[in-house]
Image 1 (spheres, one colour):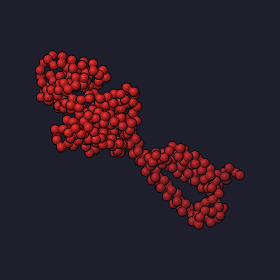
Image 2: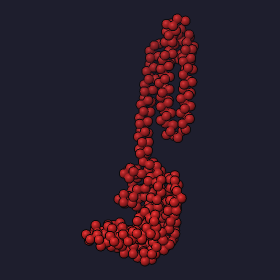
Image 3: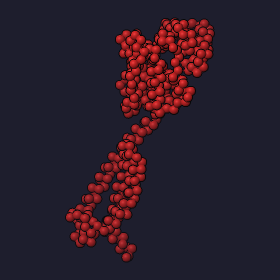
Image 4: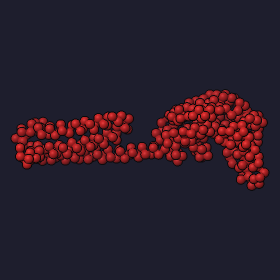
Length: 354
């Protein structure tokens, strides 16, 4: 066959149009597969299968375009269709519809891809193994038990901070947020974390109830929640269990040393522990009188348990900051701070607070 006649025949049988239309639709389907499939957690092999089928289908589409033509009466062989001279206007109109619909879908896929990419970049900017422990709500009937809720929050945070594979935001950064804030996503962005731990504490006599829930702040999904009913003498075990479960949920790796650190019991004396928590509570208020009250409580805790390392660390912290807030000479309190810090490290060389 004459090459000119052959190419003319390709044009007459709309093979060129089919090739262009097939390429446009194939591109569109590939875009949909790459953008939408991950959204529904469809595996990657499905995308590869779509691409492979489209490649195989290309020569098949060209052969069908050569042999057949779509007419108002249905699919007919090209010779028959030519004999009836299908109106050009009908073909043109159909072609316009195909282009418009394809363009509209392409725009939709484009903007969906941009939206999804922005969401992905937003989530990838925040480490998955990152957490902020917000202030715990005091549900006790006695409002004076707020010190206990604050203390439990701080001790859980301290245990989590001993896990190197976790990014844990300091208590100083989280204290400005209320215990049950409305916009967790915004708070997470401000703190640079992907996860938030909320909680509440209810203390009555020698019993305590701790409610905690771990939330992925980006998706607002509840990853884990639990209620712990314990005696005051067993509160350290609850804190340890909470820290371990959070580490497991966020898939943080723990070394043997870190496992020992988060299971440590700083004291067996529940009275000393209670006095220590009161000391930390007043220490956090940052006033001269509150520093003095904190020092008094830390000394009482040490009197109950002379081997209570965190109490010595709290005493050292109070003596260090007292001159800054009171205006008294530093040489009066710094020797006491140095002695308390050395004692804390003597009792526990791995104590972060010291």
